[in-house]
Image (cartoon, rainbow, N blue to C red; front, side, top):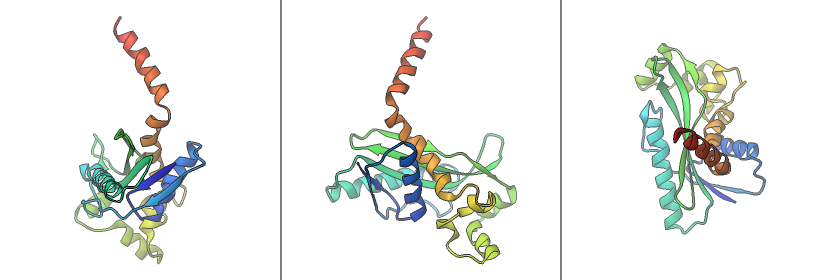
Length: 191
């Protein structure tokens, strides 16, 4: 199986590998490409999914231009959002697309952040830079990430992002279960 990922970020590549392992994929190759998200480096709200979509479109263009064979395109974008109650969260979206053009979007769990952190981000500032200053460690974004810092390493960035990848690939892997449930629900609704 050949999978193209729209980022050279090592954490995102590890997230993909974690998801593939959980889905019991053993025989695969991952090829990464630097594809811009077209959104800010700290996307907020709808920008997150737009960034994943932009990466996916760019990745598909590369595949077509370079005549690359693939089974899946995978594009991951993390950012910050507010839920329906106004609580701020860190979330990740992933878009997976197969060679036939079928696409599914996955979303990670969310880790809450304070209003102070969210407003700091909205002003264009970086929590990763603050964490690097506090910990005297560089390149935090590509290792533990904000989630890793906030959870004291219990959930690292690659693990966190892997949930979005998993939820975008599950509809492909378990399509028969989805279809069976759809049929059952449809039969109950028709009564």
